[in-house]
Image (tube, rainbow, N blue to C red; front, side, top):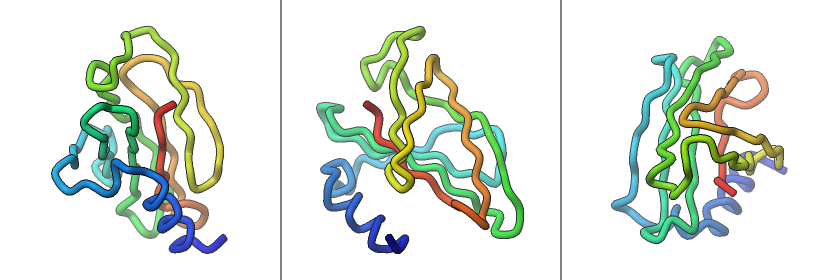
Length: 113
């Protein structure tokens, strides 16, 4: 599936992406990675995006996850479903790890499950 088509499908399927005043940026250890979220007010739909701003090199980073905002405890496991690749990752705790290679995937879009 083409990237733009996939992003448009993800946008249509996720109510958090229909809202305008819900954009929040969070810390990523690598300054070349932008990490942000959009959530519905009731937090039933939480989308996180990691984007590599370096078009020439792969980048990896630890990223902050606002567990309290998601209603999750500090040691509670949660699933980050990467919507472009349909991969699922189990994360635990307030930090996650992303790897973005512009030759493969310069961005990842996660839904918290």
